[in-house]
Image (cartoon, rainbow, N blue to C red; front, side, top):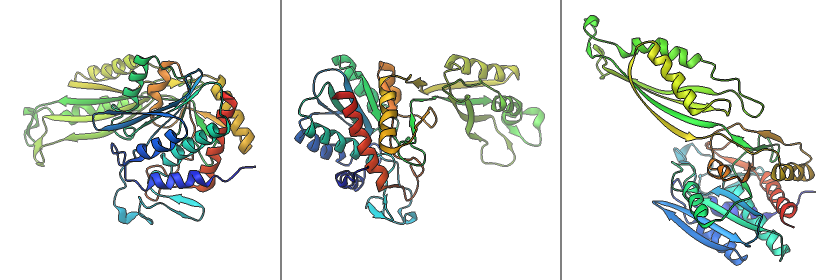
Length: 379
């Protein structure tokens, strides 16, 4: 039987009422730190550039289980498009509405309440619990979890298990968890031509015409077959720009931005070289700048995944699906340290949407799952 935990909803509404569009925190972490301090956690503020981060820990022994998440949210867009004001959370028809309901203030609230309740019920437990919260997940994500992990490494604090509260579920809480993510590789390509008059094309070099065949081949290339853990790599052009603004001028340059979401079946170097081979095949003059957004990661079945799937089954009756789909998350900075990492949160259907919302019952279920995982791993 699933219990109702109104404390989680109250905390979620408090956090959601604080405008914290990335990289702003809106005072969320201070509010959480007060709750955790009262429960016996030692809280440490780590501010890098304009980003607020919170590291809170109770206990000194291994294993260390970390709840990771973010207090920043994406912009709302025109507030007039919202049925309810985005930073005035309301419950309507059993749904909690407001920016951050799904991604991911409700999950942060569930983590906090679950941990506090667990600590109150268990004055002694085996291991330690910590929180890693940032206000830089929805933005560049360079001054948040990434830098906190560097600090922890310097101090010799090793994470054994990590639960990231991203909205991982599909239709109902627990029906799906993320055990890895694809890598992300960005490219900025400039094709060079020669500007000229459209009436005299023989005196110009049109970079648009010259690059069409190469781009067509790149867009239709089969980069890999994927593997048992990941779907095949995908390529998408995200922007194309050329021209001077005049209808009678052949542009001298064309700029294309694109992205690979890649699996462990291919390397970054392979993607770069194969892309450039297509460009060279058509003798294009170009410059290309590559940026690695994230390397792919995967948590193999072990203690954490087994505990999470067992707990979800016990509480919801669901056989959770193990997935590596979706975009990137801050788990990419935690997994490489050797920690077992899963993403477990509410359904993702309305994340970043106008009228973002989540079922109240989904939040309550998540709180129960989190506390049960703590009991399984640390008691």
